[in-house]
Length: 411
Image (cartoon, rainbow, N blue to C red; front, side, top):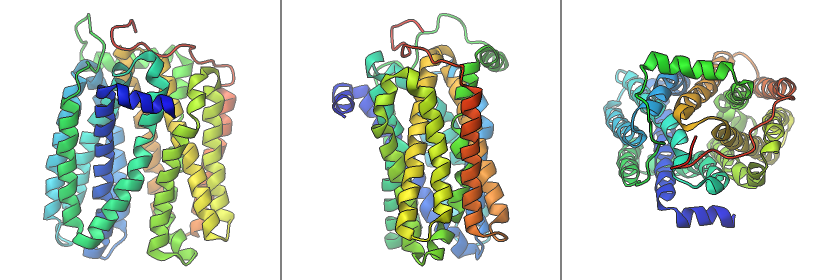
């Protein structure tokens, strides 16, 4: 913890990048939570919630290979700022969603925000090693890995409160303002967000072919970009959170608590497993264990009759999920040179978001026909089985021993 605090206090550029990411992830939840309540009220159908989630993850996944290529070709700072401004414009469209007839505009707006996010995510992930010294990278990754969990708690909770007290359109206005703040914070970063490029950037198709060739020759990197898919394939559990709360008699408050402890687990996981980041030889075992624990956690949720234990197990599952995300990012940063990092992180995110979209669509398709506990158990079993198979397949692989080069160092 002292080293993580030190990175934040010493490094102004990292502090700005971290704050900008907090703003971006928080704005995401400030929109999503009120919108998932508003759409069923306007349309009388719960299908819209599933469609919104599927559009968000599906579009993001489809675009990531292309946007990752641009993160290696163009100025990453400019990409981050323009992505925030594009998301700002998309949020404004949500103010037109006032009836069942205008509900499809919500899908257009969320789709446009997903496009912006597909540009933002690989550029931000690839930029991180360039704003910290190599020795500070493990601590910086632990802090950055907590971003999503922090804003799931803060953004979702405040978004729900603001939406309930002042209405969803006030939440949309707050989101728009936050996105402008995020753009300003990123614009203030002074360090270059990529290493100098000596050669002329190749055409986009050639750049993607180069990344695929790089993956073909490196089985460890191929293995690492499939890590996040384990928890992604179990992500369909989110569809049944409100149903699980109702099953245990916890109602709306219970559903809110489930989302809150999910975020709390994702927040705590990267910090608790921070020591693993200092021992690269532990990474593959840590990744497999974190995948398995996520699956076992939801198998437990499906079986337990006590709601307080459900909350504990959801926390444990997403503690493992948050740790898994941070460990895989750090492992990739140690293996992939800066000139390819944006493309590889984009492929990594593409596989993860496709897995999430598939899991959510399958859960949405069967939620009215099978017991919610069957969905929970099925998602948990898929992730646990994936973890076992992944570790068997990677048992002979070894990660690199040194962290990636920072600014001014060879990559």
